[in-house]
Image 1 (cartoon, rainbow, N blue to C red):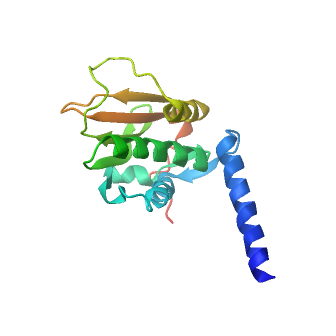
Image 2: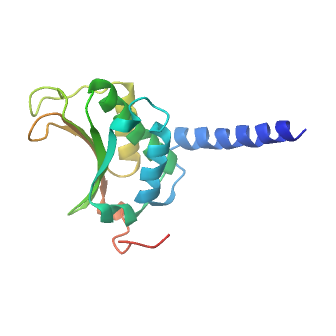
Image 3: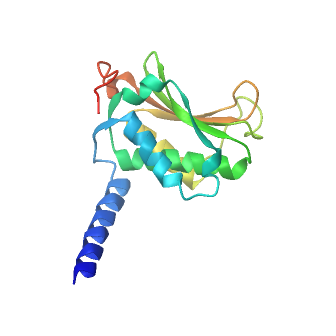
Length: 170
């Protein structure tokens, strides 16, 4: 039966995706633009999708990093979900080049976590984000940006970024 065969292929694909999310060992070359597109596809059915906007440096989308695409996408999706559920306004996400690497960020102008410099205790979702950042040789930080709100940042060091890959084409 053709339907059964399609279901089996879909189930196998889902199993591979789940294994990739669970295992930090699977990594390959990932263009940040592809990461952004995957994240947007994951939030597309969510009621808050209309409040999610790309921001940051467009050129960063052309960079290629060595990463576990599914885990990194899941981490950013978790951050977007947290921000959109905590704040009814627009939520920005994207990337920016910094002197030692790249920062992937999610920014909202909601109530934030409180006083600048206050230690944030991570729940299960943010602990996963922190682990994904570490697995990629980076770090995770929650900041209170000027003007208020909350900015969650995954930093990936320059060693994980192909500095010659400003744009490799499609």
